[in-house]
Length: 123
Image (cartoon, rainbow, N blue to C red):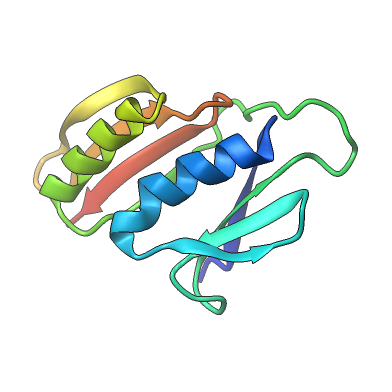
């Protein structure tokens, strides 16, 4: 259902390095790069994460209440992605753990530009 989600960043090269390293274990890579915007995913026609410097040339600002959730496929992979993100310079916004009975296991980070990212295993 989701085609892509875009988040604003200050430094494209730094952001591309962060996200390509973070998402590599999920088989993701940069599938399209157009200087001020790049799309990361497993295939051009699938769901993509877009990172960009804002079109209006103003500073990017994480939206209050906005968050991108990435489902890596298991609780163990949630834990691994959380640890990897912190090792790549992200900050903790909530350690991995069971959030809703047996339905939602998640962890939360802020990327290098302050965007909030969740790693979530649903079901």
